[in-house]
Image (tube, rainbow, N blue to C red; front, side, top):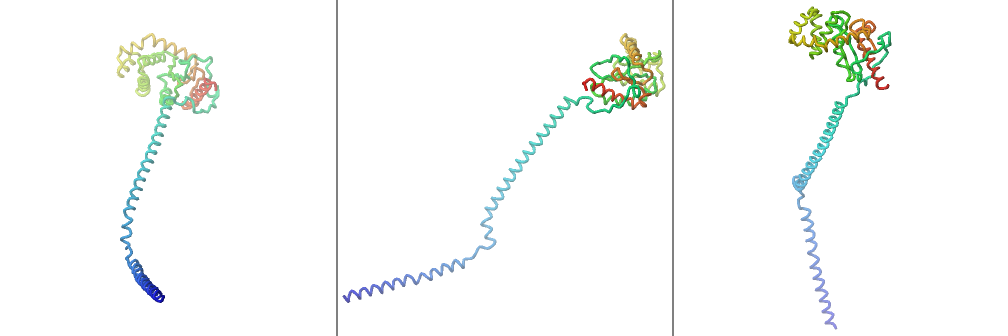
Length: 299
């Protein structure tokens, strides 16, 4: 019994010694570990960014790529939008050229009265082209007022709408005027048009060449590059003679008493005397053309 107790006590002592030897070294090890962690040098400022630098560089490259892609996308959209606007402008311009605004769109004030600013032609004479509004000028090459009217008239003719038909018509009261009317229609037959009309006004009013005889006219035409035979063929043709006769009849029907005078659509006679000036003649003509335009359209 005693032996058993001694053995038990010995075992307990041995156990306590063993436990004590296991626990005592543990504390220094733990302290050593903590101490090593504490004394381990922290990364310097130069080292810390080095670890993050590759990631930052990659991110910047990605951002630059995305920005470039967005810029290209926006550029394409802007280019497409601009191109679309250009095409719209082209289409609009093409439409305007193909379908110009209707003549007479601008409103012209019409305060002119019959008997005060113009006279009625009773009955109206038949115009050359019923589909248009005619403005007929009665003139004479030898008329100084007609010569001074030419620059104003030529500038005004350029403003006329496509529905207006301008017709020059020589006035005839005597043999000289009839001769000059024949010259006018010969020019028309030769297709020399405004160029030769201007040259004749220049010859008569600036160069003091009366062009009152056939010989004078032939020499003048030759100076302008027209052969005598070509001039005579036109000047003495049946067609030119018929046009002179018709012009004289129209002038009488319109009751023309001076030159220059205008007749709008065979109805309204405008003289410098009643208009007050040559410039006012054209203003009144504009108003009467617009009046006729409204009447044709039912307005």
